[in-house]
Structure formats: C-alpha cells, structure tokens
Length: 431
Length: 109
Image (cartoon, rainbow over the protein chains, first blue to last red):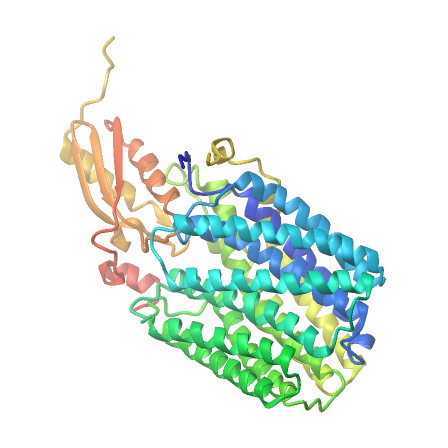
C-alpha cells in the first residue's frame, strides 16, 4: 500500500462534531432524568427508560468517545486515522441512526427501532473498521492501545446483540429475558465503554499530570482479569442465568474495578504536578462511582433487589457516575486543547496566546462540579430508596450542573464542529 | 539578485534566541520551553538557527504546534533568515530536566 499524508491529525472538525453532539445529548439526558423520574423509580423494563439509556450510551458517551478516539489516535498515540473523509460520513450516518433510534424507542415504534437500529449498527461497525485499520500505524504501543482494542472488540459484540434485539423487537422471534438484556448491557458498559475509558484515562493522566515511572504490570494484568470477568459474566448470564457463576464473575469484575482504582491511585502518586485539577476531581468521583456501581452489581448478580429501582440505580451509578464524571472532567482538557490548536496553534510563537486553562471559566466549572455531585448523589439515593420526588429534585440539580458544563465548553466545541476540513482530506490514504 | 540580509553576530542571535524561547509557553503547563528543559540544543550560524528540542512525552498533543511556534518565534529575531527545528525523542525528557522555577510553577517543589 502506498500512502500519502500531510499531517497525522484528521482536522479539528472531525472530533469536534462528535464532541459537540455528545454535549447536546448530555444535556438532553440530564433533562430526561428529571422528566422520567416517576418511571425510573418503577422499572428499568420500559421503552422510555430504554430510550433514555441509549441517549446516554449512544448519543452522549459513545459520540464523545468516538470524537476523543479520532483525536487520541493521532496526537496521543502517534497513529494515523485511516480515512478522515469516511469518518465525516460516518458521523452523519451515526447521527441519523441515533436521532431516529431514540424516539423510536421512546414512542415504542418497533419498525423505527429496527430501521434506525440497523443504521446505527452499520455506522458503529464502520467506525470500528476505521479504528482497526488505524491501529497498525501506531508506532509505540502503550497499555492504552490494548484497552482501546479490547473495548472496540466488545463494542462489536455489543452491537451484534443490540442488532438482534432491535430486529426482534419488531419481528418478535423470541422472548428476550432480563439476563439476555443484562448480557447486552454489560458488553456495552463494562466492555466497550469501560475498557475504552480506562485506557484513555491512563494515557491522559500520564500526559496531563506529568506522571512518570508507573509500572505497567498491574495495568496489563488487570486488563486480562477484567476481560475474563466480563466474558464469564456474559456467558453465564446467557447459559446459566441466576446461577452462582453469575455472582462469581460479577465478583471478578468487582475485584478488577477495585484494582483499576488502586492502579489509577498508584499512577497519580507518580505525578509531578501536585495540585489536582478540576478534571482530576471529576476523575475521583468517577472512580468512586465505579466502586459503587460494582458493589450494586454484585448485589443484583446475587439475585437480590432490595428496591424496585435498584437496577436503574446501578445503571445510573455506572452511566452518570463512572462514565459521566470522567467524560465531563475530560471535556475540560480535550475541548480547550482542540480549540487552542484550532485557533492559536498557527500563531503561537508569533504573538501572545492564552493558556488552555484560560479558555474555560474555572468558577463555572467548579459550580458545575458541585451541582453534578450533589445531583448525582441525590438521584442515586432517590433510586435506592424508591423516591420519585427526590429523583426529580436531585435530577434538576444534576441537570443544572450539566447545563453549566455545556455552557462552559460548548462554545469551544462548536467552532471545531463547524470548521473546514483539514488539508489531510485531499490526501486520503490510497490503497 | 542579491538579497540584502542583516548581518548580526551569531552570539548575539543566540542570546536573543534563548530569550525568545523563554516567551514560548507550553499552553497546558503555562511554563516556557526553556525552563521546562525541552530545548536540548540551540546553534546559530550566519543567520541560520538550528534547534534540537523535545516534548514532555512522545505522545504529546502539541507535537505539531510547538516546533512551529519555536520556528515562528525565532524567525522574528533580526538577522535570522532560516530556522531548522529538529524534534527528537532521545534522550527522553524527564521532569527532572525542569528548572527549579518550572518545578515550582507546576507545584512539584
């Protein structure tokens, strides 16, 4: 293969589009928690709850992770995105799929779930192909690469399950049990989102905290443990639901989650930047929420559900807690960086330019963090004690935090999303 | 056609170059490249400046923009007509290479 390339970076607009869309979905998700509070305390098995969950998973977190990966590959891993041009097409197909898929769920339009679900699956598969074709260009391997590859493999498995379920929703081939749904959920949460977030966190912490000298042994061993736990959990959920094996593999995942928290702590101990940034405070909450979610998962895996909305509480702890705080915190690093490169990268050295931290309003960021944390704890508590009023009230506080965050960083994401294509576009790799 | 070029002694250019680079900040850390210890070598020869520099990590997100910022900054020095920036990864940058001023700025000491 002969390839030409002007720059490794795919251009600011590609990650910018995904990141800006992710922020919009984040705001909608937070408002959805307030809106659906009465349903959330009753059951997780409801089309509106499915819609809210997929809004968070696909519209917010996956969109954000796709954008982050388009930027991570070239700038932090040194690789080359296979085809930025196809990436731009992918954005539109994925967006169309997600925008159609979520209302279809919400209004229980089974044909829409099948049609837009298929579109979403196609776009995600295409993204995975993009990434898999980009991996060989990475010159120096880092545990992050292995985590991301594993995450992408689980993503393929997740959407394979999701695709079958979406079609089944329309054609009713078989009954989908709770355990079968749980397998799909864990493939997505623990597999795709979890491993990708962990991998990206290692790299970004190393970069931004100037962490040095952290050994990779535990990081790599825990990658193996997590995958064993997840594979075992999914197989046991499908083959022997309710068995001891489900609890045993849930315990393996819980231990692995604790090891990840320990590993991140050890990594942070090697940091040279002593003061914790706003991003790191979000990370601390995210890691605490991971432990909460893992503990809840362990209880549920044992077949106990002390409150009728504990499954929703478990999902909320994972989505809004573990992923939500991590994604929110990292937006204070990734978006200023991309915006800085876009606006000032070409004039730095020529005239004074702002620092990255000067591109976000720090007071607004801390206010957002306080509201997010208060709201998150309140919603989680409301779900655990099955109190719709508490979920709604705390959800409003949480939504306030989200809106402050979006107000702070959306103005950084939007110019990227609307920016012109990079030079690299005209120099696509040629097969 | 002969190009009229300002001829300034190389040692003066070098002095000016170090000062210029002290004005180029890492936008994440807020510390200049010299205090960070990122500039390994700076040489001037008849108005041509050569820089050997690194970044805090091979995966540094600034690997495209920082060398360009260095080039632009040095081209502003009177008498400099060419700047060559060589981005190297050996020796690998270590935080210990920072000046005390930089270590203080990032809260290390």
